[in-house]
Image 1: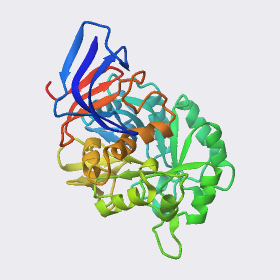
Image 2 (image 1 turned 180 degrees about the horizontal axis):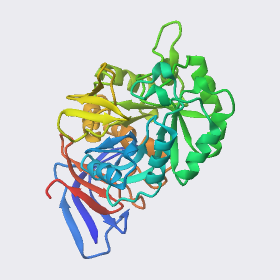
Image 3 (image 1 turned 180 degrees about the vertical axis):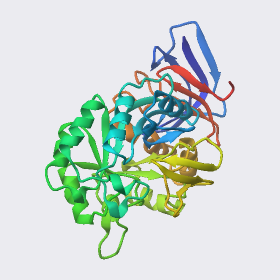
Image 4 (image 1 turned 90 degrees about the horizontal axis):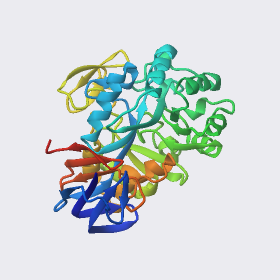
Length: 374
């Protein structure tokens, strides 16, 4: 069945917002629907944006990627469509080799009718103990390409993105990862600016949750944060909950880096969408109130929803820039051809929001997977 969305304001990354009618048929945006059996959506007062993409999410609605169950991944995928996220990377964390392997094996076989799991983000265990954050230190390891290759095969080669501390690399680890077409991101790192610059030249393409768990900026040694913002080749994840990074810090990143190399993530844990309380993260107790913290106060992921992140930064950038940082840039980094643009011949992945960025409809590959009216 075709979908016709009438009188909708369309936001794209490279053009001014415009009012128009959208036609969707057979998974794609089309010039005009040929099927007379069409569902009509009145788009007055709504905004259409390309579906949000979250490249760093651990859990939601009680489920965590490390639970290594289909039920956990299903809970995450179902939750994400309510916030307009149409695609995500299932993100692991530093744990025992056995637990990581189980999580990878489980994710390799996951299929969803809701938000699409488009791969796996391996966060840890190849990170720096000095910047562990909520990554359990007892399981942190030195970079090991043979172990990674084993895990890559276990995951059916679905690891698309890996967070590492590049200063720990002593061999061709980064180059080997790039030869496998895995995006390498620097995170939980104590790298100096020079170390991160050298790693970028070897193949590091991104920086994990900018500002968080990395060497801070100093005027005589700008550290990983300074290099991340200065280096035009590096993308930067950012958690725009204004807890992990203040509004001013997010604004600073957007002004210095520019919207072409920033993308929003949630880094959400299993408590997202649930009540306040105490939850598990990798065997650690996390206290969840307006944020998520370990007992010592360390931030332990977020409970951020993507549409809330988009709303938070909406006053800091233009509609075009908002599309870039919520969808277009992540799709470009992952080389997802045919996504991230609302135009004929592109896949019909989109979210319809009201002016307050509340999600009204989420559509994936031409199918309505969430309606706030249901």
